[in-house]
Image (tube, rainbow, N blue to C red):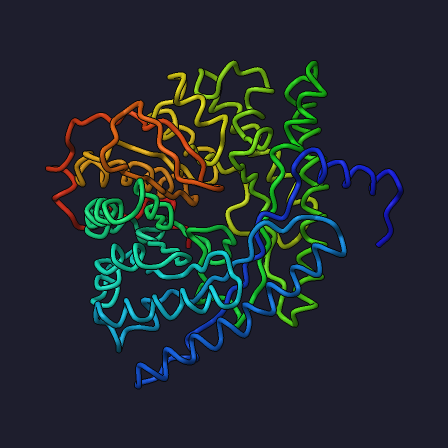
Length: 452
């Protein structure tokens, strides 16, 4: 592959001035082969495997950064869903011990976050999965790097409402045990969860994956915002084409890095996730792209339409650039992690109901949203159920990361630190749906599931 001088300059400008980076390199590791009847032996095998591969990832990623000059922000590992390998050791104490083992291994190998401490419960819940869930408050509060997920539904099976009804209480307990409830940022609830997602907190190494697989998550909101601002008179068709061409270039850079890193590590290359992932840094905001379109403030009428246009262009540009696009791939709109989103909440332009509407067209849904700490568990469960229902009916991935902040009320500003950012606590309607959700059972699969 050869590059012109103009292409080299363009890429350098994106990195230096428009915050282009590789947001994450996530190595998926199968730990099913670590299982042993002796729990100490099991722990040791898991620990050694994570450290062995984790050290290779961090070493080779650093070499790639030096070679190409493109920042790799996070080095991460995702594991086989832990509930699947703990069936014969499913006690609260052993889940806590395994969590400590995994967290220590990640720390020793220089990994930023390690995902997979979760369960697939879309049609029912086993004793091991229930035990994992109830152990999460202590697991999350006593570790630094572990991330947890719960896939509570898919289009073929519907939604496991009994599992959803457990979540609010668990989140409130995690919030009480961690500063400003920040531990809740390491727990995400999905429907239609992808097995090759490189982004935390939802990354896990799915049952259909090989022994190891390297997945890349790229970013580039600043790059896209810049080209939008340079084309204020383009009509929407032209604007879409401009964004597609830009994302094509971003994706090609991500695939180049990912393939070379996988080759150097001696592991298969998986996918490149083309989601635009913002940070709290100035200029690195998806909300600012929408505002550059001509929306006064994200959340105003027309915002859902604008996000739909952006999502469509991002997916088309990425699909043209790579045959290995996967994961979530689209646009993240985490509120606290995107300075423009947080500002819109503070101005009153963005409400929890409008974010729910965005879920119909964006990658994730209700992401990194701070709510009052006294919000009842039943209302948290109902908010989550609303977002999951959008994913089931529309046959797409949706997810929720919601943070009840102890001692805070609507309008108070809360900081979670680092890339997790800060935001005003958002207003939540306190009218109850508890009698409805307490019916339990399973939301049936929709008609679109009957495709055979």
